[in-house]
Image (tube, rainbow, N blue to C red; front, side, top):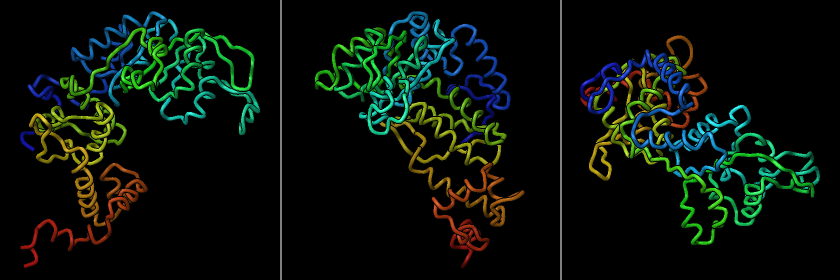
Length: 368
């Protein structure tokens, strides 16, 4: 993959200095302490101007009780920003209650938000508090608000505006003191035009909007994120990864990352799983994005690369899966995890037997 450089020598594609990954835990702790003392942004990695603009807005609005609307693509870190807002607020001593509106069926969403009394509906065997009640005195983070049904939106508007509601099955009004933080990846103004979202609810949420940039607009943060995720997953798997090729880092930096930071994190976990030595194994094919730049093929080559690495490990271990020196130990995986991967990838004994493996490596000439 080209010249190999240590993490100590690697920074951005331009070659700026970067920490040795074995020392990254200490340096990250130092950065977290430094940032925590000023802004409580310890979970957010990056120093790009685009990200700094967001953090500056967070620092401004967090001490107030104003409602914040976070907008950004999937995987950009909206929940991390919501946590930072809560930690910087006067409510940090109380709960930050989170709810993903897209993950709950619309028929249950009202009960999740406002709670219900025993017997309010079939299956309501006990009284239950809703998220608004649980967040009293703290903050309520509603993710994917664009998925809230039109029928429920008026009740949500009243709860936000009046800070009061009734549990399902009860006539008693409950008053709360909740700071609202909402997030969505959808275009709410377009939804208003299509009459899929109430305009008055939008204005109630849109008191202080913050646009979170996609990863492609802050590529200078990708080397920092790569080091962060490699350190995190390598510690978890007990691997001593210290190097990455310069070409691999360039490819990672120029990749499209349509799933943003979440996609990058998942891909780096795969890379760490595939790595057997001290150099990060980054599957790489000649793929190009719309701008003609070479990128890492996140999906197309991974299955093949993962299969090849597992077969190599099994061959090196003479077919042994578990035990000292077995393939599972070599890959830093549990025995059951490796066996599940072998089933998923259709790896059988014939794939890693000595004769088959020798012929596969040497090619047709080996059998002539």
